Length: 323
Image (tube, rainbow, N blue to C red; front, side, top):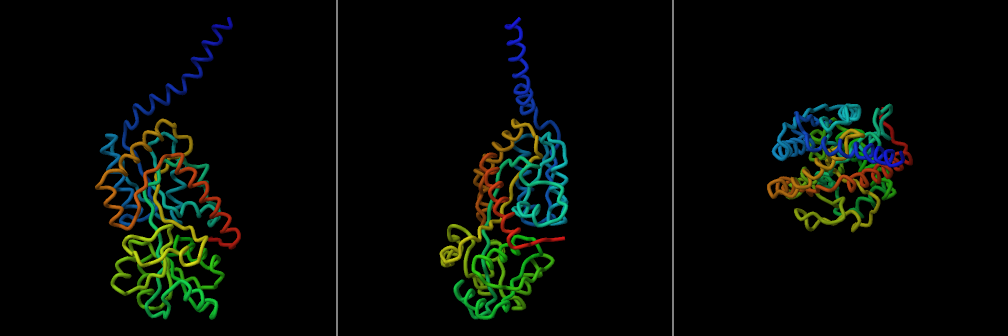
């Protein structure tokens, strides 16, 4: 009797493992939808399309990008979170997702509990740039001017709640200065007014900033990263300039809905890790002043948890909210 019971328990315990293994072996058996919370042609969309193409080659099924822009990427994130956890709906998200649940009211997902991180694809630092019309050459100059004339300095962003906006808020807090936030409807209009001198400062993506800095149309004061950019070797990091705590990084990562079978998550993660080692893929990102990553699911999950915790604490302390 006991022997029969033990055998039955062993068989029952083995069934989930066998099912997960079978799910991974069969996956994918039909096209996979890859949701993106931004317009086609933007940096996150381009990342998603590159990864989707490579996953299609690696796994033998179509990976179809589906753009669902709006609400700071929340529309796509909410749709992904509520999708079946079977591996056939994925999300390529940007780092903004780790801010949104604290910034926006009535968000219908949790960035930690609603998703399984598969792999971080890439990361790109911001560059603190100023209009050449502003008579400053260093971060110390900017801080001195901002303290001498509070709120005179304006900083542009691509909109409320975007990474450039939050970078500016973190800088204000870390440097102990006041600057006036000027939100725009997109990065293009913000750049136009920065080049024209209508606004003074912005935290731009490295890809967007580098050519304007090299052409002398913008002045770079610092890079928001742990190391200097090879493309801007003479521009110090923000930490080298005496400002710590502005740990904002633009990244893209691949996620699945919470509850997706671990074997499928592992299969996708392994595929992305291999893809990010391919020379042609690495070149695409390096040419955009971005760092190709391709880490494990557990590594990416730990990063997301830490980032959400840090961001939520700052948003609460700064009393930032978006309706």
